[in-house]
Length: 363
Image 1 (cartoon, helix red, strand yellow):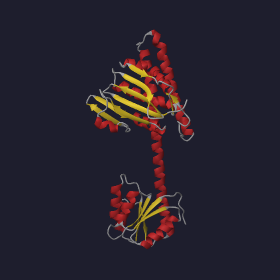
Image 2 (cartoon, helix red, strand yellow):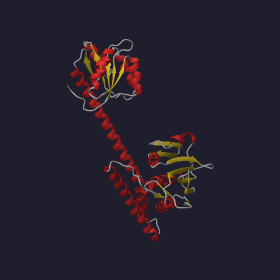
Image 3 (tube, one colour):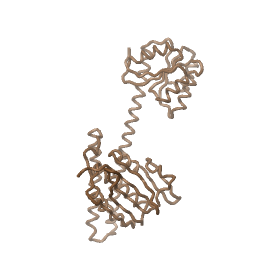
């Protein structure tokens, strides 16, 4: 008798209690999790509560027959990716063809041989679980590519900014070393991000914040050193308010730089020629805050709840676009993984205020 190569969850639908008992016992012995339903209505409820990996469905039942049940299942899940195997005593060729036309992947005739039933169930559950694993791997890879691409964007943008200035002779000779330093440090950051991701993948993607800490004062200094000239080029006069005391928070230093520079670059894009404040301040008990506040157009109240959704673009008016894109979504998730919060506040006289709040680490 065949055995299941991987466990799965199977919904067995039959109006005959004896059939439910026999099939359930047979599948349970193969380490499947079995859920039963004695009617079409019950089958729909069970499916909606927790979609299985396969439905073993009696074709001819009083009330809702198998065809009506399958139609109801397909209405409840889009796209419908759960294999359905009909169990039927009918030998009518047209009826069996109709079963395939409405989406069944296979059928078993009554009375069935246990070996045949298990062979078909094992095959279709195995295919379903394999597809699920491939889809999960594809999502993880896409997420990693998006993450790396986003985090490389800021240092590479700094490289392009500085190199364009140098190529076009748009800088005083005494400032050339500073632009060269910007190019060098940005390239180092880009390589550091790649190295961090490769090491994280090699070690199973462990928590990057475990045992790590970052100094808020040093982070503010780094932001000003990195973006001072780019802010100047956009007519932004920054005000920096360092912490009044030593302020260390529980997050990797490079990661905090990634998150905070995303907020600064957003301010450069959407609040040009406006004041910008970078501040470190006490938050809730046991927490510190890093605040990035500008006097740009801000986000319309009706759309603020969409701000941290991935790949969302918020249209302010036909001429302006504010994009939360992938950056704010990733930043929020990164901060929360470190035990903190990231949120947006509208400013009273116009502008945006983003707050990163993180757990304090004792010096």
